[in-house]
Length: 88
Image (cartoon, rainbow, N blue to C red; front, top):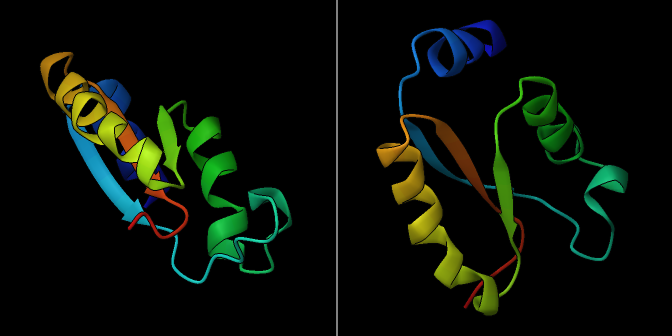
């Protein structure tokens, strides 16, 4: 998993634009203190793999999604948009 992702992003420079929901997130806690390991470990893993990411947590953040994903495609790099809370 992680090594394949690292290879696609850094070695092959495959443009990778991803929107991922952080399902089960406890929005009353910071990401680093979430009881769900899939939520708590997501951003440290992306940081360790040097994969850029952004966190969308409100409707006000939603307009950033399109430009970030387009930039990943045009720059031939990765960007992961994490949906951390309901945005509607």
